[in-house]
Length: 301
Image 1 (cartoon, one colour):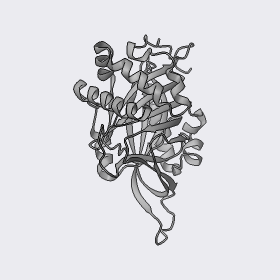
Image 2 (cartoon, rainbow, N blue to C red):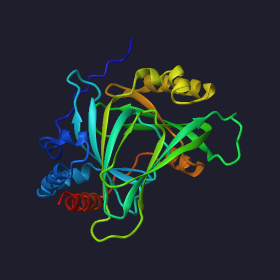
Image 3 (cartoon, helix red, strand yellow):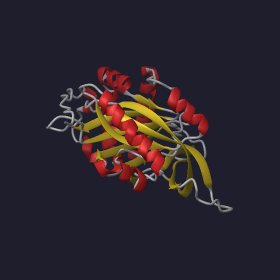
C-alpha cells in the first residue's frame, strides 16, 4: 500500500501575507513588486523574517519563497512564487538542469545587464561526434527530492548516474522585464551578465512561478528514457534508487520528482559532497532584498 502523506502545512509567515502577490505570475509588474519589497523593508520584523528565510542555491543565486498555494487536502503545495536575487558576485551559474514543475519567470535588472539563457539537448552517449557541433561531455546527476509538505526547501538527494553528452541548442540574452516559460523537461542554464557598469544597485531580481508537479509518468522508467533522455541503464538505476529512497522515508517525507542536472566533473563532486547547504547570513540576505528593491524602484519610476 502506498504511504499516505498528510503533514499539515504550517501557517504562512508574515512576509508572505502581502495581498495580491499572485498577480506577479502574470508577467512584469514592477509597481507591485516595488510595493511588496517596500512593505517588507519598512518593517524590521518582516525584513528579518524574510532574510532568515532566504536560501542559497550554489554556486550562484539566492532565493526567497514569497507565496505558496497550499493543497487543502494536505500533502504537497500546488504552486509557488519565488524571488531569485542575482549579483555580479553571485551570477547564478547553476549549470544545465531541468525542473520538477513547469515554470514561468520574468526579470527585473539594472541597465547594462542581461540574463543569459542557454537551452540544451540531451544526446545518447553512443552518438557520433560531428565536427563543429558544440557537444559537451558532462556528468549526469539526478536530484531526488524529498518533499516535507511544508512549502519550504525540500531535502535534496543527488545520485550520480555516469557521464552524458549534451548539445547547446540556443542562447538567448534577455533584457530587463523580459520573460520566459520552461517545461519541466527543458534542460537549460540561466546566468547573469554585466555588460557595462551603471549607477545604482547591481542586483537583479527574477520572479519565478512554479505550478503543479510534473506528470508522474515522467518519473517512471519510460518517462526517464523517452522524455528526460536517460539511457536505459541509467533509467533502471534511478528507478531502483527511487524505490529504495521511498522505502526509507519516514512519515512526513514524500518522494517527489527527480530533476536532471548536467554539471562539470568538478561541479558534480561539489554537488555530491556538499551535504546540508549553508544559508546566507541575514546581513547578506537583507542586503540582497534592499538592493533588489532599489533596482525595482528605478524600473517602476
